[in-house]
Length: 94
Image (cartoon, rainbow, N blue to C red; front, side, top):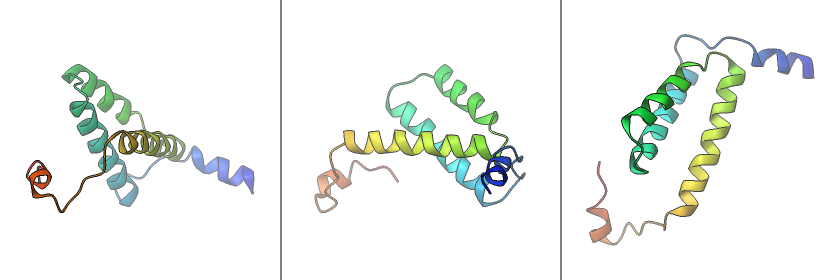
């Protein structure tokens, strides 16, 4: 059973579908966080180049795990948003 699961890690990703859409959402999140952290265009280009190397289920799983950790760190570093305070709501870009 374990060999079958490990074998899936080397399977190529499909050209389209939910997993591809989800990975692109994570890429967008990573790029936006990098921009908010003051990273320049070269750093963002590197993020995109690294993203383009994700071509198997195993690499996708590693990227999801890494992004989950980054998102959790960022979430803990920011104070919670009080959505009832309209002054704070005005600062949110939609």
